Amino acid sequence: MRENAAKNGFETAQTRIIANERDDNLELMKRIAIDMDEVVADTMRRYLDLYNSDFGLNLTAEYFRGRHIFEAIDPEHVSKCMEYFHRADFFAEIPVMPGSQDVVRDLNEHYEVFITTAAMDVPCSFTAKFEWLEKHFPFISPSRIVFCGDKSIIAADYLIDDNLRHLRNFRGKGILYTAPHNVSDTEFPRVSNWEEVREMFLG
Image 1 (cartoon, helix red, strand yellow):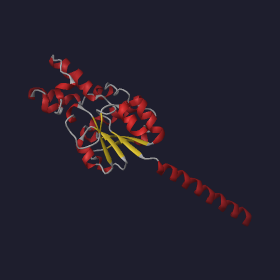
Image 2 (image 1 turned 60 degrees about the horizontal axis):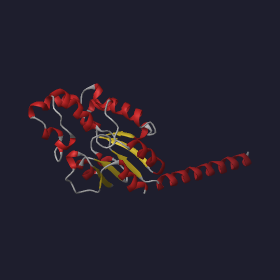
Image 3 (image 1 turned 90 degrees about the vertical axis):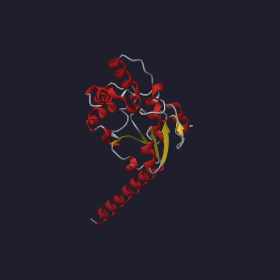
Image 4 (image 1 turned 30 degrees about the vertical axis):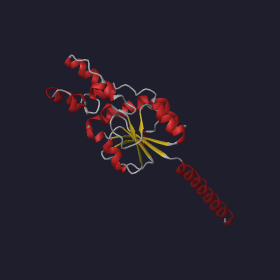
C-alpha cells in the first residue's frame, strides 16, 4: 500500500509539473485583443449600403472622413439610421474586413487571440454578433469572444481597435485600426489594413 501511495504521489507530482510547464508555455504567448466592428467586420460598408438605399444617395466612406456617422449625416436621418443597429439582419450581413480571417488565423498560432467587442453599446446585438463570429472566425473559441462595455477590463498585451476611447482606457499597448472617423488621430501606433497587422506581429 505504501508503494502504491508513493507511486500515486509521484504521479500526482509529475502531473503538477507537466501542468505547470504548460502554464509557463501559455504565459510566454502574448495576448492580443481585437475589436470587431470596423476592424474584422466592415460595419461601415454595411451601413452605407442601407443608408444609400434608403435615402437615394451614393455616399462613400470618404464622406465620413474625420467624423462619426451621426455627426456627418443629415440630422433628419438620424432616428432612421439608429434603427439599423436594432435590425436582426444588420450584423448578420456585415462583410468581413479584407484579409482579416487569414491574418487572425495566423496570429492565433503565435498569440492568445481574443475578440473583444463593446456589445453593451447595442445590447440587442449579442446573439447576432456571436453568430457572425462563429460563421466567419470559427477557429476562435467561444471562450475567447468577449462582450463588454469598458475595455479597460481587458487583460491583454495589445488591443487593436478603431475607437480612441477604448484605446485610452486600455492598460496594455493600443494599436489604432484605421477607420474614416479616426484618420486624423496620431495618439497611437496605426495599422491601415490586415497586411500591416501581419507585418507588425508576425514580421
